[in-house]
Image (cartoon, rainbow, N blue to C red; front, side, top):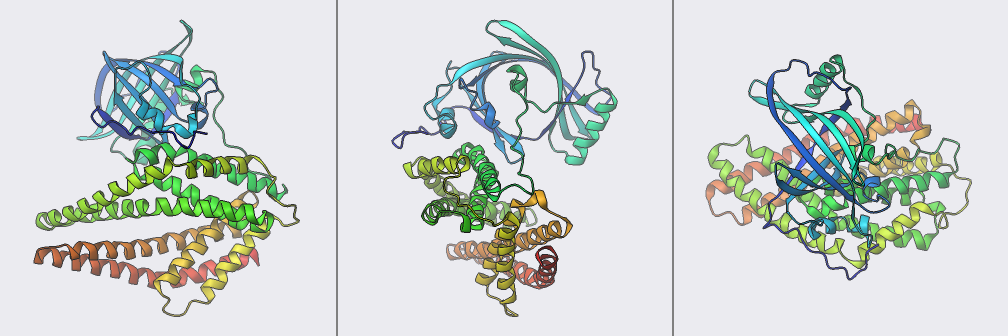
Length: 495
């Protein structure tokens, strides 16, 4: 864990920096594999020389993070690949220095601490590529790689693999290409990145969820470990601040950790649990404003596509204001993520996921804990009047999340009724989330209207505000039968 007085250098934006999201599928191929006939364009043959850096214990590799120095046609760059939900984000820094840039190392401060980075292996790739097109639309890029591994000055391995990287095509296009490549002779990949194969590391697997009859303490430790790992995986992307999904996933992990502690409250030492809950609440509230702005920027950007050019320019000014606010919030987030308070919270979470000293012995089962959360949700819904306030609906959303997370904690013992209950809570949670987003959107629109200087801008703001009210009214109408379904399924699941 880093010291609290560590000074972190920001990314130097004067360097050539790029960032992109990768969504790809890997297949294995035998030597001599021939590509099937596909619509598109062959790409020039390339040679990539990548020297991977990690700690002596491969701390980065074990968390699905890779850092490499790449040479391609004389161009030298440093590339950091980090998890982004189920995909990954690649950060490319043009830099001829022989050591990893401080800006990238600082993104990895939680994973490295004071451990040193060193070159662990060099991989040479000869790549034949093909850009698949449907008409003029680039659907995906297929890369056929011949790989050799150099370690300690000698070649230790050679292998072949195929990558399908999504461009503008959807998941269906990706799966269609996969079928065609399999028909041409491609077969299942073992799932390991090139680095894992080069280092002879086994595939990274998540710890198995405890069996239904396991003690509740095992469930709690497993859940804490899962969500702490997910939080740490998205810490670098949250620090970087270029992909909203990183911060979103980090906030989800924080919320789930709070839910685990809340569900397990009867089994935890009160002072320990309360203190940790307070710190997780602090982190959640730190990330909340940034997430809200990300949602609003995405929503209004999508809305602008349906407007005429004149109104689109006015809305662009509004979106620009939101982006300026988001940039300011990012600086605050980054400042707190470099604080002693945050580092201490991470240390405590990692300790909690490994030890059981704060968990009391109890005869309670994980299903009983989940049932308690459903009862709280049921009682809150039953107390709703015919026209509940926005605040009360938001509280129902929170309780629905807690009930869902508590139920998913016991998912190894889920039966059909419980699975249906989980789906109902997710539906209610998502719909009430849109309701809350509409409330936030209207707040931002009023702010836009306050600083508008033209009649047209005021008219546009009024139209947008009316649209948000319509969103809320529609959800209020749709949510009532969903509440009934949720309670019915909850009764079948928990009695």
